[in-house]
Amino acid sequence: MAEAEPTLLQQIRKREVELSVETDQARQEAEQIIADARRGAAEIIKKAETDGQNTADEHYKKGLASVLDEVEKLKQRGEEEAESARLQGEQHLPEAIDKILSVVTPE
Figure 1: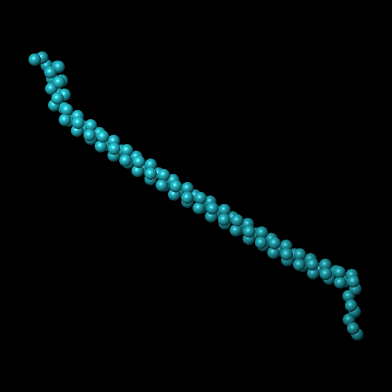
Figure 2 (figure 1 turned 90 degrees about the vertical axis):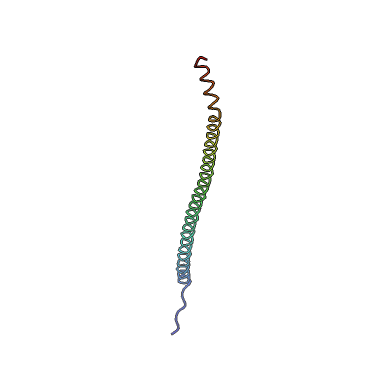
């Protein structure tokens, strides 16, 4: 005896089941793609934040080094000017003493 051919209703039901399975698989694949994309985006954001922080730190350190260098130069220049003023004062010290003594002591 030959197998009876499925009825139109059975054929439709079978196709509905097949489409339902395909739809579920497509949905799972789409959800996986979305999850992977979200993870990838999170990694990109984290890397960008880290890179940005590193760049900011580098910029800060360079700026700080520049400021500290300038402070050191100003300090050195101040010390040199103070030493120059001291030496000039010492050169004029005998004259200053003579003037003070001439004003204070009667001749």
